Image (cartoon, rainbow, N blue to C red; front, top):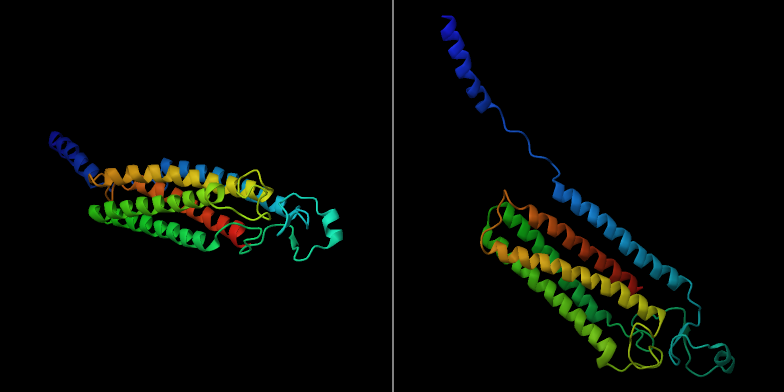
Length: 250
């Protein structure tokens, strides 16, 4: 009888182990921790850039820019003569082509394009979590294409500013808007250039996700990579909204 009880006890142990509920998954994966730490450093980086822009703008002289003379011109003597039509300001005003060459309309459309890529990225992650592999691949492809269009329009804007268009004296003494013509130009190319590099880096990752998704690499149990890249992509889009507001609209 003792032997039978021992056998019964030993046979019941595996059954008890099998009926034990699985351990809950970790709510935060190492990848998420890593991307949030990385994004924290990116927040500090762009905060430094935008903060520097604001300080330089606030400290700019009231006559730093005008519609008739190139940026940096000493207007102390000119102002005594009171030339007709002269308008001075501490910083180039939006929608004023005599001092500000930036196309707000074009960039507003480009901003909408970038925001659309955030939507397709959300849809890609949602489709992946539903195990819809075809829509996951389609939405990732759409995100990659839309992001590439954004960069293409930005490259077109850079070409217009640097080479293709000739601007009045109030924008640049050379007729071209290059980083060395004014503090405003230096800030513009530094901030938008670094953001463009971040977009390009994100696109490399999204293209990699896109290629793998067409081979069915992602599912509801393997969506971590898409989730991590989507966090980065949404951050890049948010930074652009701030840059567009601060540089183009204010």
